[in-house]
Image (tube, rainbow, N blue to C red; front, side):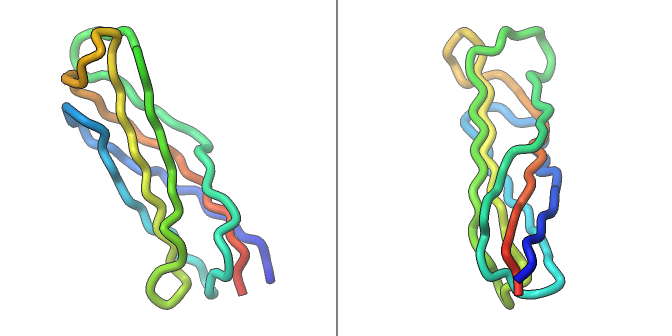
Length: 105
């Protein structure tokens, strides 16, 4: 059973308000036996427009496990930026680079 990995960029278009969720699919040539890990291997996120001092950045990655015929694994990313005012009312955008490590048949 070979260990395999792929890296994908998960985009977050400009938005305002609460955390945003984006899902990206990874496709493998054979069936995935186990998802070993999903890690953030890069990121670029920012406030859009005015200059803001970063108060909080929340980034979460989740594997949703093998899908359909077992060769697809969906990864869900959550992003939230908040400035020092404490309000969640400033526009932000960016991307997260996710690396998925699997054991496949």
